[in-house]
Length: 441
Image 1 (tube, one colour):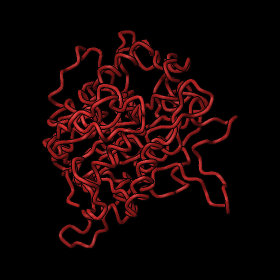
Image 2 (spheres, rainbow, N blue to C red; image 1 turned 180 degrees about the vertical axis):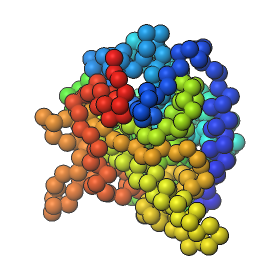
Image 3 (cartoon, one colour; image 1 turned 45 degrees about the vertical axis):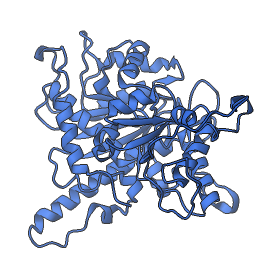
Image 4 (tube, rainbow, N blue to C red; image 1 turned 30 degrees about the vertical axis):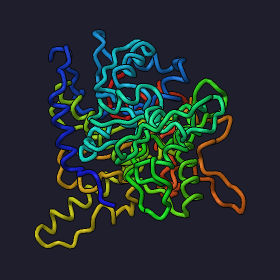
């Protein structure tokens, strides 16, 4: 299948977008430079299970954020909120966090699971079917997609497709099919409300080559491109046990497609934690914030704070390995300039294309990269010392481990081991400041 993006071009687009963003209202007198002899770092915060549980803020979150801003409410270090949620606009999520944490959060600090889709410019002009909930049509347009079809629009155009719920079937005369121009690609933003409807109609689109007016043709393979955001199998809200996430919806879709056709569903891209492309994007946002703080030295280290072993911890560790391999590769290329023979980043890490998520080839040419990324696991969400490890690989039948990651990611137990384990986000921030030699008032 022809790939639908060019990462290097995407990086330049992201840089342009960041540089063209509205400047913050702060003046340079509020800039915060690293203390003498201290390290320069950035913080990546997961949201659900780290800062909030559903609509309820975790008490430690309010406390720690009071220490992250000065008396003017301005951040002392670069902060980005990296969530696999994707059912809202960045501005709405920023306002929600501002209210819960009682500090100002701007949309430039918020990264949703679908945010990297801004860089996939090759598909922005395609006709795309979007699945999820919330203002997904507005979200798609905001990301750059120009021709968007929702599941509800598809239902309306083809009234015979959605027949699972008897109450939604046409009561009397069946309305005629309106027909739509063929769909070129499918974008999965997050778990929908009516799983059966979305699963049925997405399979219809895949097996009809984008035109549900046609009969299924399982022999037409591979199918049109699918890009999926958010691979979380589980997430934590107010309930005592984790809830099913979009990763579970993907498991259903993959199983249905395989059962009907005999073929594996193929993704053009998997976006959101733990894919490397998500951390690439977050690092660029951190870098831009550091510039706004007046930092002239590059950010040397990132700290990713999360509660989910298979998204937050696996992703941060995977990104750290990628950074290490990238530095080795760059050094080899410099040492053998013109001589060739240097191994690639993919060879060094043996990553799958899903894990890279389109990030291949960025590093080795980019400067001012972080030296590494540390993962910090908190015990206020999916992970719990008392209740076990619902997302941690555990012994199963025939001693085979239970892997809660996505099908297209490797199972590497070492990547689920956090650099640090703490009780909550307040303890995590205190640990980071101590590690980097910063005073925490």
